[in-house]
Image 1: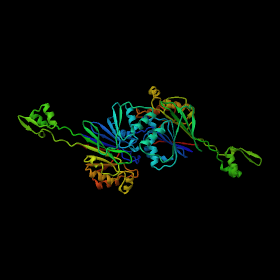
Image 2 (image 1 turned 90 degrees about the vertical axis):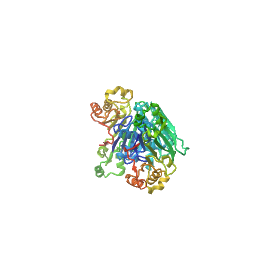
Image 3 (image 1 turned 135 degrees about the vertical axis):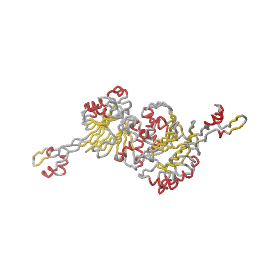
Length: 307
Length: 307
């Protein structure tokens, strides 16, 4: 399995220098997820030829405008595209009422089923919000001026795959294969053959975590621990650390420290303040803390493969 | 005086082929107006280097998503730009409540004064909604699935300008100049000198009218009569005239007929259906009816000068 993450917007607060506000498209092979919904996200999906109709779930971190204002247009356009497939939207409370007030003034309705699921901020640890055969999504609180959540996407552990050579060697029956896949040993002529000799080495499961907006905190390190890819906001350079704290955002340095402490494989920073036309200083700063860091850039794809 | 109109979006219903949904920036020299507010309008304002803070009034034709979804982001960004100047928004009823519900869920507030003015659909003729020293704006109902208005922008008639030669020749006093400017003759040594001999020829006042979305109708011909520039929706080609009628839109041919009947100088068509990648057939069709027709294109500026 692989995750393909496409950055649709990297700007904080408002669009600037051709950068859009926060939105991401995560394709997990089995289905796609939309993470945050900044204004113009449907324009970006068109531009990068991503498929809106593959999106099964939307995860909204918080209800500030730069993370939600693209949602009504996106949901309306799915309607115009004759979507029939159900859609679920996870967010802090309030989104459904606002969206319904839009449907009301525009005298319109959606023709596909939509469900808004509210995330409760009283949970202080990660909690599972979605699980399919292949994917598990966890929400966890981060710390901002309004109720805000990060999200972690994990490929589920597969069953073991039988080594084709073992099938031939032992003429395995279907029942035996099922039993070995679930981790049971094989008994042949009174002799026990360990299941580990019969299966292929398990591939590593892929994982991605998304954290925006938050003041610097170690409270959610556990929630993002060890992921293959972490997206973390880095609104400011460290010379504005005080301002970052007041406005409940992070510096590039702080994002790097979090990545290091959480022992992630790769970090992408984004949610850049509109004061920065040139992003190179943010990249230099974060790489001082965490070498495997990259800048979120509109249209760029980050692929994580299970190996 | 001149009007400079910049097209920010020309697509109907949803963004397509790099085209944004409806929005226009009209700079009248004394102030700027925003007409409709499709998603991404603030991205377009940035791109074409137009000044958001010059906008004093916003005119919203109707409350369908493709005409309003850029409004919350635009109003919020004015706040981030430290705007203090008051802003007025004209629209059919409902916009204020929807915008306030956004402020409520995002736990934010505007720091500049904003006033929402509701247009009543029970008026069947044009009615003045704004007047300054230099500009007059009229709203008039057009015919769509929801309450919808067109807008006409007229430069006000100037006072006469005194011919500098007359000032020297007759050694005019300030009181005499004031009197001549208002159209009074000059009396010198018992002789009447007609004011027309003392003033410069009056320049023609500029005018612009905006009509979207509407089914084909002659009801608003009077309201747009004789304007220098008319923007009119032309969602479909004439082979889809029946569909246009059902969905309460116009064909390019019908937009051309309206321009001809209203005796306008120049027509721009827009609000193209997403089915048309190539717009050339729409242009050919409208020009069969009205030669001086042009396609609305993102970023293109149309200048009307008083001559």
